Amino acid sequence: MEFVFLLFVLVISVVVHEVSHGAVANSLGDPTAKNAGRLTLNPIGHVDPVGSLLLPFLLILSGGPVIGWAKPVPINPFMLKNQTWAPALVSLAGPGSNLALALVFGLLVRFLPLETLSPLFSGALVSVVQLNLYLALFNLVPIPPLDGSHLLFAFLPKSLEPLKMFLARYGFFILLFLVFLFPPFLSFLSFLVRTLLVVFVGA
Image (cartoon, rainbow, N blue to C red; front, top):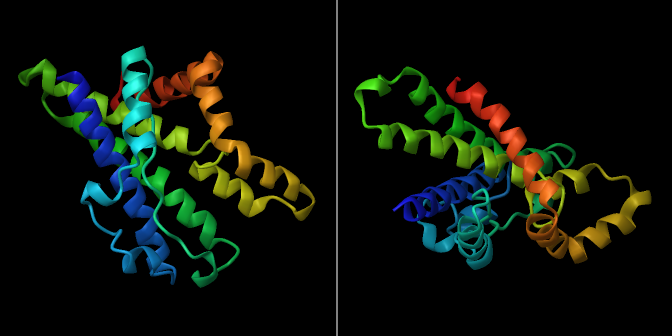
C-alpha cells in the first residue's frame, strides 16, 4: 500500500510539475503546450515510462528516495515574450509547483489537529511534503533532462558551448550514474530534503 501511495503521489506531482511549465509558457506568449493538449491534469499524456515509473519503482525497491520526472511539455522558446528571462521562468515553474505543494501540505501538518487524526493520515501528509521536496531539488540539478539544465543553458556564455553540447549528449547517462552508482549524490539530496522538511512541517 505504501508503494502504491507513493507512486500515486509521484504521478500527480510530476503532472502538476509539467502542467506548470506549460501554463507559465502560455502566459508568456508560447501556446505550444496548450495547443498540444498538455495543459491537462490527466496523467496519461504526461507519464514518462522511465522517469515516472521505472526509476521510482527501482528506487522504492532499493529503499532510496522517490524521485523522477514526467514527459516534458513542448516549449517553443522563440515565442516567449522575453527571451532573456522567460526561459528561466518556465524552467523554474516545475520545481516551483512542487515547492508550492510541499508548502500547502506542510501547512496542513502544522495546523490540522493531527493528534486527533490517524497516524497513517498524518504520515501520508508528511510523505507528500517530503516527496515534493525531493522532486523540486532533484529537478533543479543542472543535468539534462532535468529543469536545472535549462537554467544552466540559459546563462552559459558562448565560450562554454562545448559543455552544453556534452551535457545535452551524455546528461541522461551522467544522471543515472549519480543516482545509482554515486551514493554521495542521494545522501546530499536527502540531507537537503531533511533540512527543508523541518522548515515546512516543523520539528
